[in-house]
Amino acid sequence: MTLHVLDPVRPDAVGLGSIVKRWENVALRLGLSEPARSLGASLLRAELDPEARNRRGGVRRGTLIATVPDAAAGTAGLTELERRGVVSARSESDWLSAKIFLDPRVRATCIVGSGLVRPGEGAVASNALPERVVAELREWHDGLERPERWFIVVRGRSGSGRDTVAALVGYLLGAPLLRCASQELRTQQDLLEPELSGAVAVWDSTALEASPEDLRRAAAWLGRSTTAAIAIVDEGQDAPDVGERSLLLIETDAKDRAERKHVWKRALEIQMSGAPELDVAAGELARRSRAGAGLAVRAARALTPAPALDLVAAAERELLKLARPSSLRGIAVEHPNVPRERLVLSTHAAGSIDRVLALAQSSTDEEQRRGVKALFSGSSGTGKSLTARIIASELRLPLFRVDLASVVSKWVGETEKNLAQALHAAESSGAVLLFDEGDALFAKRGEVQRGTDRYANMEASYLLQAFEAFDGVAIVTTNLLGNIDSAFVRRFDVCVHFQPPEPAERATLWRRELGAPGETLTPAFVDRTLAAATLTGGNIASASRLARALAAQRSDALVSEGDVCTAVGSELDKMGASVEARKWFAKGGEAPGGGGVPIR
Image (cartoon, rainbow, N blue to C red; front, side):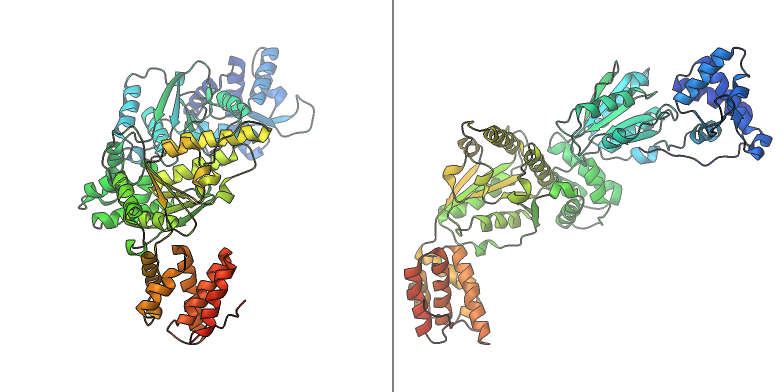
């Protein structure tokens, strides 16, 4: 909880009448009875007396009670002050003779006012919030009569400008903000705040699943605010029910590309007003990422004027740095730079890249379906993951590869939460999201025969909804197309089956993977002998690496036929084709410059 405990302040320069007047305002906000207010004023005067300050002795309970005509009312009023935490005793003697003192925060508030800082105009006037959000708050404030009757729920993704909205509310009301996280209310209960400071109570429940007890505590705490109260929550998260207060819901996520462009343009203008091509850069960033006002402003702070495309690339790098660590749990972040020439596919499969790119670069915002989803199926090593990296390279976007071992959890609900964070992180940064071997997540739902089956089906159903709502580029690869639930298959925009390469394609792959060390191999050897080995692109890449290593072991910069034959035999042996592998090992042993791998 953001509380400011001020050191004792000397009141010499402040009139006693002004100090007592502030006490009356504090007592009114705390809801104290008349005897309690009178006793508090008397104690305040006594503590401000110079002789009392020198004695540093406090005031005895009995002495203070004697300052009011009715002893019973005085006792009740003093008990009320102690119960609210306004005063405390620092003596072990009997009750009436014990000395009491004002809480230091109460004394400081009466002398110099609240220690909380009010949001200044400069902190919120040049924000990058969507115009719709600012207009909603201005309209609410224009018709405002009693702020204490309002409860404002600010909902959106991380980095969408929720804190800026809270600051804008504080600025409009001329009140400081008192923030409290959900977990803080579990361990501490402040008896004075938020009434003492007259602050806008702000309950922050982001990145935490609030329990019913958390919501109950939050409702009680927010209801104590003497002005408007605010709850900041994530998408789909519950907000507490705060008594009789009227509800104002503010959605901070940009609704469409036009709002995202406005957010980015304002964020860039704040940092580099007057720089050229800001409009072009803002439009491109709005198309490529779903970052909100908070993330956009923070990313823009690290930028310097540059050409539009360089500005876009720099902004995307900054967005990735600003991602919450929890959002990247189970995600391997890559920045691929793979040329399309690396990929050797059939004409049909190669067209999949163009189709995905065309959808990803589409400028229409009115389509009912969101994002671009592609399913790549086929046996291992046929180029599915490489194609995903090439797509990310062509789009100049980072690649988020989901590590299923880190995302899937044995605890109920944890898998869904981890997946939601991964999807939101990819949307905010505009990254391409890759589910490698995705049949483990997108598997068919089955009949409920055991208790665990029910939760497995719930995870699949959640992923089905979240995947359809994902507003970015997502690619799922699988070796087992038959295991993918048909409901998922229907939601893919592009489905491509990757076939093993034909002999001519294998010859091309060998030449590219061997590179310069293999240029001395004869065309006949490559086109006939090597192309005859039924290997996939992944196998050829692995075998080429081994062949180059064998050549380097001989301190020879060139790969020989024997090196390649030995490497092919090793790949076939790895695949379980031991009979065919022996033939290739034999070729490697017979050929000049053999790799030295024994024939098995």
